[in-house]
Length: 77
Image (cartoon, rainbow, N blue to C red; front, side, top):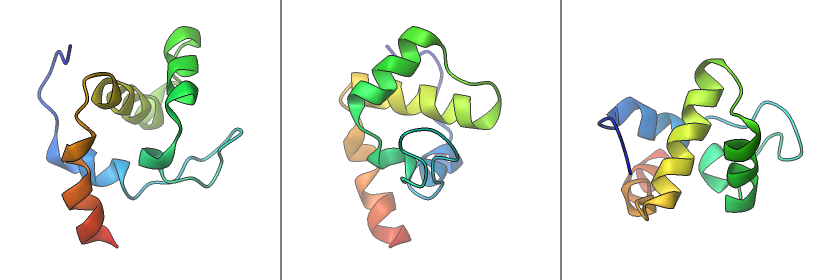
């Protein structure tokens, strides 16, 4: 369950920022596969902004809220 309201800028960041490291380096965050986010959830999200974004994306996927990203992504592309 989401514990805090989603910042609109965070949604924009999820559809525009690329993964800076790891197996999926270069992928736009919202394109990361769910198992990768689950792995981070189990192992611990990195610190800083990227960890916050990955954690938010995990919660969005967990709660079936991906539809929130579609209109933003359409606008960004």
